[in-house]
Length: 172
Image (tube, rainbow, N blue to C red):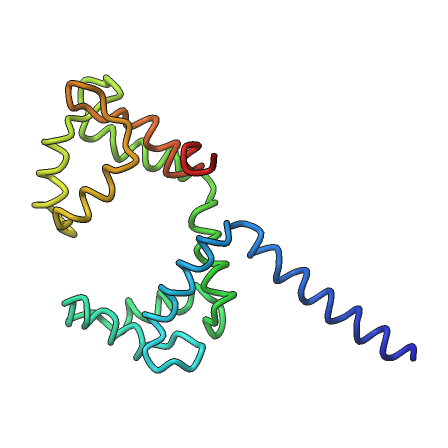
């Protein structure tokens, strides 16, 4: 009987540590992460491996990903990347040390006068024509929650807060 209780305690303890990562997200977010994990886990074995990443990148049109880049991604998991590890990695990324400051610094590059605003149309043009080019649909999605004033300027400080802390409108 004592061993059964000890066994139950171990099980609950394991669930508790597991539940910490799950408590970081809303149920709808966890479902979205499950869908994303399923898309990346190409062979459906419950673990993301290098071949899964290669195939995912291939489907996205990026065929020349270096093995070193893939290894670097996989090493962030410090072991096999199952769904719980995947969720933990996102939790760490989303709740990192100073993500708001990092995002603000990036926006400030587009705001040389320090107004706290960037022009929506100019920013759209940059997103669609520079670096990892966004599609019009992706830009529209990104702007859906953006606080945009009547003159077409994005309040990027408020947007950074929404990105890092969530949107109060969504939660209520």
